[in-house]
Image 1 (cartoon, rainbow, N blue to C red):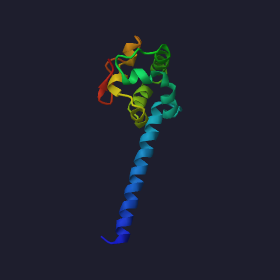
Image 2: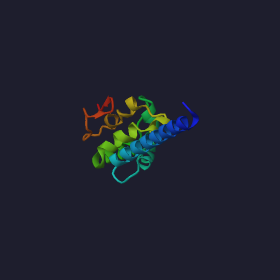
Image 3: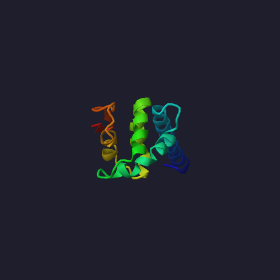
Image 4: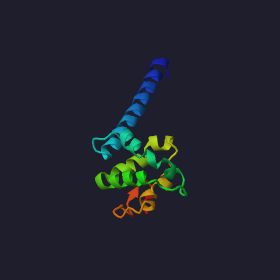
Length: 120
């Protein structure tokens, strides 16, 4: 493969990867309505310790935020949970998915799938 063809292939791969990242970010933000997924994730910051440790107490402020999110945009919670941002923050989805139950949120969507996880 000559240099110009190789450069074109590399450029196309970079564009493909960049567009895929953009599309994923847009889809995740769509789950949260007009709120960017980063803002939705930031609003759940009181939940950080409970999202990484199943034995950690869930702060009331976390329960309040999660309860509100479940009521207004339940798909947003899943989008935040599975986002690259959550992974970077050290959130463990298998543990974080238990927060609504640990908060005793009655109207939680128990049994709903969130990626490969199921809400208890």
